[in-house]
Length: 382
Image (cartoon, rainbow, N blue to C red):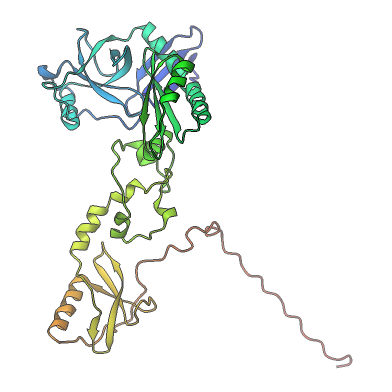
């Protein structure tokens, strides 16, 4: 609520717009809110004009749905305008998010070639009647999603309706569903059409896409990457955790979607590059005072830790990658260094994560009270 006016502002982050409602007249003013969601694209070519791209625009709809459209209306359209566009059946309403030469870059990234593909058209700017009809369709989405889940459960289908998106004219709806296997929803589509009196399109999404729609905070304290900026999800395997020498604990490697965290892939290339510069230690190092076994490797620091007892972390000795190569070369020549015990060795830099999940680890330590020992009394008279 704005304190200085009789207006109420509502943010629709699914479509990237802000809706201002005048309480007295009830009129709505809908404007594009740049940066409202992860589909924002920074226009690096702002102010540059190229005539061959003047009629091409990028239009966004709900969630991650975008498209490139050509202006066939003859009207002057700019970024932030609400436009009525061509759809497979009827028409849809979206928001113009990009214009000018930057659209050509987006077309190249998405593999869209206007010379070989026929692009859909922008009919006109949205009129008040179009916007009102669009808002009425949006208001039906929540109720339709709840009812559709009930209909799917009545048929015993192993699927979950994650979201519903109505077309701008209200004659069609896209039902986003999640399922582990193949689902026969032929009867379900008939029930939807009979219940809601609309055309139905079913679109399957994954668990990561569902988490991006719901949103939330990760264990790092920041917004989920899938809800913030990730639009294309790549496959993630446990090999990414092995390369980074992470503990294969499913509870720590899984995200809120139940799948492996997307951030596991972020530093894989850096670890692979650093690991390629480490020497391969297949056998223990031969020394005059015994054999030293590899027990721990700090990949990024290029440091290897050795111990005279196999598998023991009681007393370890850090060696750089160059020092290990030098000792390996000496062993191949039949030579043995004297010892690794040259000086006092401090504890290794790595620490164990055991105990990090204790809920009392931040509590202050309680001071122990000293009890006064009572003197033993001897027999009476002493």
